[in-house]
Image (cartoon, rainbow, N blue to C red; front, side, top):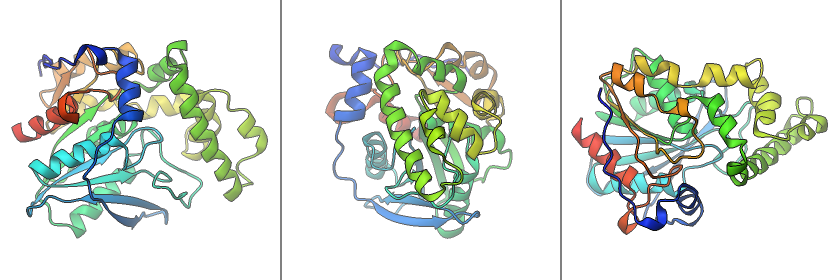
Length: 319
């Protein structure tokens, strides 16, 4: 599919990628979304919390929204797309990955960039217990990588899944990891690492035989965290094995439903490999849009309605 020419033209003060990223992640507020929580039990005995919001009119359309690293269903980029979809199309369910809903999950394992089995269980739960004829998927950053890997590894997608939109996605995880370790990204790096170490310390309380103090002390970088915890807790050899097997870029050629990927060219989290031009040109179901601006999940626009949210709705309506 030809590359989509982006029409995103932000105001001058949000053209800086870092300012767009920081404002959108810390200062933006989306109000008026009423969420109802539902807990589902996973096949291994763990749980995931789903936060539902509903259209005022009865609808058979649903958007399933996935957050980024150390996010949750109350992040304002999640609420923004849920609010717009509720107003224009139907219901929304925002997934909290394991351990991200404000309560520690039960198992030693948690979530990661390639954990598609949890998404599959959520979708199967929705298909069994809810009445939706049209389901759309929307993922941000890490959640976008999960979404794209899920689409590219499931040849038997339910017929009710009609399309997907992925925003600011590190489709090549090793490259994104290297970018996050550069000086320009030190602020984000430290913030992510702080939250991840705090979670590892809580894991130590519940699983002292698995998490030693030495293990925690060895986490000096995000890659260290993936070496000592992410990879070991989820069956990978090390961080590089985790990045290689979980990166969604390798699965993009197999995507079989209309899917839009929006990655800003000034997203400091993304390496050159995170712009899969060749894959988009060779797959009629993969639409790649690369706006000049937008930072990382920072597509600021007028009236607190982000460009990425409007494009998500437009794309869904065009399918």
